[in-house]
Image (tube, rainbow, N blue to C red; front, side):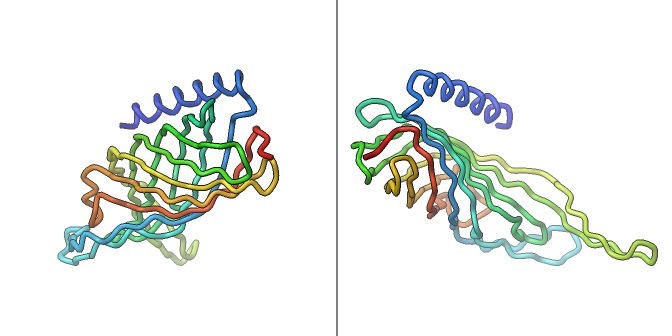
Length: 208
């Protein structure tokens, strides 16, 4: 999965650069903030093998979104984006950070100041787990370590709908609803993880 993700990002970057070289005015970049949600699996885990049981959490928290797309003729285009939890959350005695990434086909009809768009694509979900501990001694006092342990990778199908509101010919606000269907997302209660976000973007195309 890691090799596939790396190759896919390089391929996307090359395709994006090639397309923007031929149609620079159609390139959009954006950054957003939102949240992703999923229920708890309601599982009790003996994480450290000492008989102490920890419950699995819900998926929540503040997420960042970063991405880019190229809109071609007739409202069609392609793009990619990554969504990541800003801070680590607690997971059954450990810390974790979820990341969603995807590549999409885009349909965005019209070229006015209000432009709806629909996306559908494929990607992956990555959960990274960490162990956080505090150590204290009489010489250096207390310090906290945060050690990466392992990660879990999953295939995902991505769907989204949003509206771009152009506050200037080049700057837009984009409220967006995403649906991440994550295969075998056993760490949480459902394979579906909806996400709600608002992005600020820059379009090299002029929208009057």
